[in-house]
Structures are given as structure tokens and as C-alpha cells.
Figure 1 (cartoon, one colour):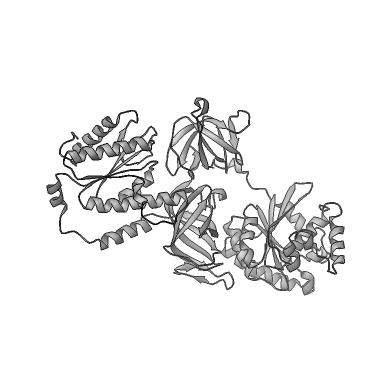
Figure 2 (cartoon, rainbow, N blue to C red):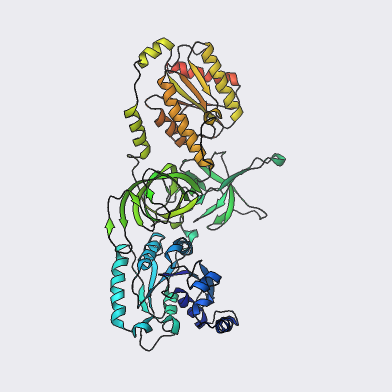
Length: 591
């Protein structure tokens, strides 16, 4: 069992752990004596915290900077105890330490009382889904073992924890330096010791018994020796799966059946469970992107969308503000993300709640709505913590993190607002669409040709442009690489570059179709959401998606025409021409 120890700086977390290790006989032989000798040599008083504070800076300053893990066992089970830093400047490290914990011991100094990080760490435990929390009121010897003071702290902190949906499993008065109520019960106390309390913790439900979740980390394609396997690789976050199980990918909605389980230098197997790094091949040849989540059909499915409500803590040097682009990382998914709305910001010092704030300050805890630039798959924190936790990156640094608590309606998305503002400010031409159609002899159209082969779809697009032009139509083909030439961008992340490329295509299409032209582009690996974004950006003009690929299309893909990649360029162009004639875009399909 993983147990994290948290609390305000200097409230005695490391001392609690050091005493717990020493009094259970879990220290390596000679360790205690060596530390005592080191302290004597340097004329320093011995502290049990020195058993854990391995970093030189920590012993010099007397604070825990990094998380320290130590191991001990009882007759009941093995333990990993995580000592998390209490100083406000090292909250990132505290979160790292707490992220894998099943239970927590939260230490409060009886003399100093409840401090800023006593509350903040409580918030973070709540957001990370650590439900088993025991509060240790330490340094009881400094207040002459006043149970009145202990009861006062207990009442005040219980009231605080109730606000953040944590019901503590108990409060224990301890004097860690003296070893009182850690392992051995003091004469002035009759309740459970810390060790007895730890032993009473119930284990969480094993991850392999939860619904199956497999975030796709990468797709490997091997070509030597006629090997045509397409292997979807990653780590199973929860649940278990077997060969022949039907599976679904979100957010694309593609379905297939597991054909084989693959691994490096492993024997053949037919099942895998949580924690396994594996590869899958599927019965169908699907195109699936990194970041999608595979789940087993028939089990509770993850959510998928672009807008959700989250509990978030912010550690960035600058405030998190609305409408500024950040990056979200959730499992293997990466996407641009925006702060859409701040519902509530809670001051961890005063416990005051602020509504209607436009930004989230450093060290603030907030409930807010976030919106991604593309759909991502996730679970709620109450269902499966592995797929509900995320971090926010700002300027290449992790600046915040949190958990998803509910899905939000996308009816009022930031993209809709931006498009509406664009249309409201659009300067209308004095020439009407009817006049342009009469002059050109055809309607305006945005044609997107997508497929697996860049060379083939580009050849089809160029031939289509030539045929339309020779037939007297106003047509223009924009090469895939031409769009970004001469345009500045500081993006290096492939997913961000892709999102910006799609956005530029949509905005340019709005101009080209407004001028009455037939605008032709190619876009490989075009998924359902790319199509939706392009359709929204090109509105009010219609868009035609032409798919030339073997892969089965996503549900609601909006493709108007599917062409086999085995046909010739001329045959593909003829099919598109007949479609344009049927839809009355052009007068004659012989192009």
C-alpha cells in the first residue's frame, strides 16, 4: 500500500516517518547509529527526519525538497511511505508524491495550528482522489498534551475537510520526536496508534477489476519480411482484455476486435491487464491517432468531448487567464486548451470563495470549465482516477493540474463564439453569390480530398483542378505544404502544428468560397473532428469531403464520396466530377 505523508513545512512529516521506520525495526542495519554519529560529529542535535532527508540541501535547510520513498513491512502487508515536501515552493513535488498514493497522513503542528499548506494539501489530496486521510496532530509535547487544544484543531480542520468532500478516517494526537502514539501508545492516550491505523486501511479495488482503458501511445508498422502488422502500443491503465474481445476507440468511435497481443521478447499470450505495456493488432485495418483511448465494448465507456468541468490547482509563474492557449496532457492525449469559465476560486488561507473571477492566480484552487481544441477521451474523478487527471503546460513548463469532475455542454464553445464574432464583423461584398454563379457558371465549393497516400491524393487534386479549369470553371488547388510557406509560426509540437494547419485551411476556404471559386485541398489523416472544424470555419458555404482510403471512416465522418485507392487518377477524377454534377455544383461532369 502506498501512503503519502503531507502537511505544512516544519510540522514534522519526516520525523513521523523516521520514527515509524525506526520503531518498527525497518531501518537497514546500522543506519540509525550512522545518522546519530554523523549528527554528533557535526555538533547537531539528532533528528529522526535525517533518516529520510537524503539531499544535502534538505539537511542544510531543514526542509524536504524532493519526495522520498521508503519501504517497510508488517505481518499484514508491505508499505511504501512517501515523504512529500511541505514548503509552498515545492508543491509540484508534493503532487508528484501524492499522485500514486492510496491513503494519506496529514500532519499538523499542535503548537502552530492549521496553516496555509495544511489546507492547500487537503485540497490537493481531494483533487487527486485520495479518499483515505488520517490527520496527525503532532508535537503534543509542546502544548503539554492539551486535549482541549487537540479537540479545537480537530473541530476546525474537520469543518474544512467537509467543504472539499473529504471525510477523515480519524485524528491522532502524537509526539513524533518522542515516538508517542506512532507505534507505541502513550499512557495519556487510549485510541489507535498511527501503525494500527495504517494497518486498518482497506486496499482499493485492483486496477485490473475496473473497466478496460488503453490510451494509445504509438502505432508501429513493420515492413520487413512481408510483415504487415499494424501494432497499437501503450500501457493498460485499468481493466483487462483478451484476444477476440470487441473494442472501441474514443473519440473517433472506430470499432474492431482484438486479433493478437504483441510484445518484445515475450511468449504468445491471449490476455493482458492493468499495468502491462503491450501492443495489439486488430481484426480490421483502422487508422487511429495517438491519444485515443481503447475500451472494451459492453463495459462503461469513457466520455469524449472538448469541454469539461475540472478542479484545478495553478502553480504557474503567471496567472491562468481566459482565452489564452495552453496545452493539456491527459494520459497520452495532447491538445491545445483554453480556460473557458471560472466558476469558483477558493482561497486556501482565508477559506473565502470568489465567484466570477477572470483568472486563476498562482497557488489558487479553482473549479472551472476548460475547452480543448479537439475532443479527448476521459473518465470522471469519481469513476477512474487514471483517466481523469491532467496537467496544464504553459511556456514548456507544467504550470497546473487537476481532475475532471463533469462533462460540459459544447453548445457555447469558444470556437462557436469566435466564428460568430468573425461573421458579425465580416465585410460583405457588393457582389452577390447569385451574380458570381451566373458569371462563373458554377457554384462555390470547398473540396477536401483525404486519404492514406499523399502522392495519390495530390495527383487526383491536381488533375481535378486541371479538368475543372479546362472546362471553364474557376478552380484552384492549394498544395498541402504551400499553406504554411511564408507564414510565421513558433509551434514545434506536431499536434499543435496540425491544429493550426486545419484552422488556416478553414479560414482560407471561407475567403476562397466567398469569392465564388471551387477551392481544392488535400489533407491526410483527416479524422471526423478535422472535418467538423473545417465545416464550421467554412460556413455558411458547404464543404465536400472526398475519401480515398481503405480505412473505414469514423461514424458521422461527413464524407460525401468514398473512392477506392485501387482506381486510377483519371477514374477518381471522373467520380468526383459526376458527384459535382449531381449536386449541381458544375453544369457538366465531363472534365
